Length: 377
Image 1: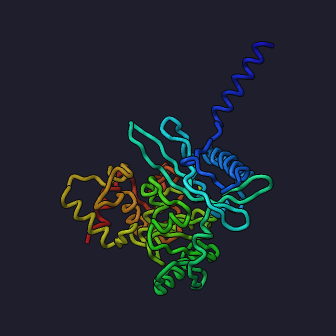
Image 2 (image 1 turned 30 degrees about the horizontal axis):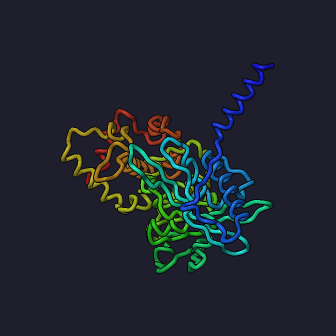
Image 3 (image 1 turned 90 degrees about the horizontal axis):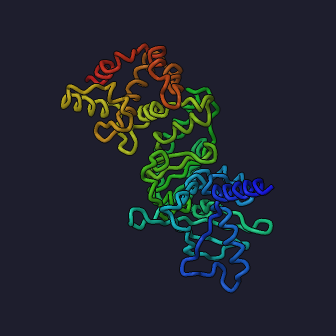
């Protein structure tokens, strides 16, 4: 019996260690609700529970409305796992609190720490606490922060913007969504397009007043979808940012999403929309690769492709750009359906070269000379 009790205590300690409760601190011991310490404590306890779930990436309906979470997946994913490493992270710090409508509150929370004796600020996030049953649920403030945006509908795309609007670009993008739907034999999407002037405006609309990691996540910095592909968001000040749209469109509208080889998708995106934020078109990309080949005649493009993100030409990720060349070649020779099949080459590209030979008639051993041929004048 004694041994069983010891084992039970050890098990309880283990569970508490795995799911340790997050405990926020109040900056300078601020009162979250003026002259109402009971409500202050209720908000603080609910926030502890919410951030515990966020830290473990295990949100429940207790603290998050499931439909709201689906609509703003970006927000909740960027709160997940923060502070998990308690060796370097401090307790989350409540910096500000103020009441809004219907008994709700806006909170500002800082995530800080110290690493190698250097203090750091990781993220400062604003979120909304809304009364639910006997406690609070937490929401992304996106709707509140963008409610002043203007709106313009172009065909199947409704644009939201804070200042200027380029209708020519908007029409081009709407036309492209219809063409892509036709090519992929899918329904034309009804899309909301939030065109932010900058990455900073985009992040602040989501409640991220500061985020140290976002500039390393280009798929989210430049263009991405939320609400399972129903909302398209860019921080590029561009109503026709095709490059960031295609990958998420394929993910949410076509089958076999787990087999998508994303570097090739980036190549497909560069073919239709120009590369990333540089907007370099195919002729420019080929010229850049020709110039690199002249400088380094011993370069092997197959080796460079296999280096992945560790290889670059003119500040581009080489395997993205070479994927664009290959997509163009297969598109011209075999058509869109064949070129699209190469997208489904495995998450890590494990089937890419086999598919390239089968679909595009390009053998792995001939990869280098194929790229050399494709970049010629």
